[in-house]
Image 1 (cartoon, rainbow, N blue to C red):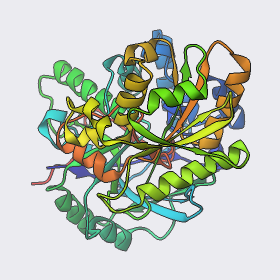
Image 2 (tube, rainbow, N blue to C red):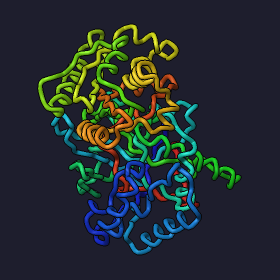
Image 3 (cartoon, helix red, strand yellow):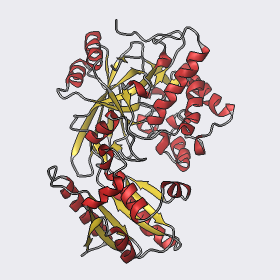
Length: 459
């Protein structure tokens, strides 16, 4: 099914740029406009100058916006600021990090070129909704620079860990590049050039499907670029670089793979007391108030109770949420009642089991009577991976704007097996359903699409 291939990766030359920590950045879509100046001030060779932040609303800018980047990219290649490997390779990518639980974990994956496939082919599977309007800016950047600056984060199944075992046995001893990100996560790359190992890995992927974890819009951009190139070139071949996308591929069974929850801070349009909130929720949830400490204690306690419930065996655990009302400093544990699922009868079973669907359909639309369009147009929901940051924002918001009532809903993470089940059924999760942590960094490795070069397909 899936086709992967080695490629000649492009990377920064540390002799020219100095510390990689100062030039590598998070993905463009998590960088705020305010942070751009800070990244550029760190180092004039910052990756932010190439992988420019998206325009508001996903609209394209003028021609100069993209041509300037393409010129800078070529200038850095000519000046040896960027170096392209002379030999094609697969790249083992490891990241050592501290999980919010306190455990130190190592996630492992491989970076490769992957043959593009339309979603309806069942080879590369999405799980989140895609908005075509968002890709216009990225498409223009890709078409002008002829380079893929960041990797799609995808998953595959490998219960016996054959792929990574082969790669680790054949990797070069010397690290190709390593950085420590702002969260203290250590990202490292190692080349694998052994042709026998690469061939064996390619063969292993032939019977695998790939599941996009992060980068749905970037993958859709690559599909759109391929369609453009096909129209431009009557002799377009499946070996063309434009028929491939750079991906980071991680096994679903990897012990270092983590999915964190994305908590929701809802700004209720108007005044709502904690008592009214409980009244609205009680038809579908059992409510237990958490008391006995500071707001930090309340949040920690409700998260602990949720994790404890989520860890119970199937059939015993109850779906749980936490909600914090900052105006009154009150916190509740919510346990889903059976009759709540009556509001989800129009959805497939795989979606009914998702916490994010229960939150969206039962709590926000059912109990609070806010539809999706109202939430979007009014910017009523803000998303946070860090519960402490979410609480700080909730408390700040209730002091600054008395016309709305901030309500913080804290959640358990979506499970990897749920991502697979949803994707296998060609279903789509709500927005911000998953947060795979840590993010893949932009600038450690990227892929240059050179006209006239061809990707060697398996015979």
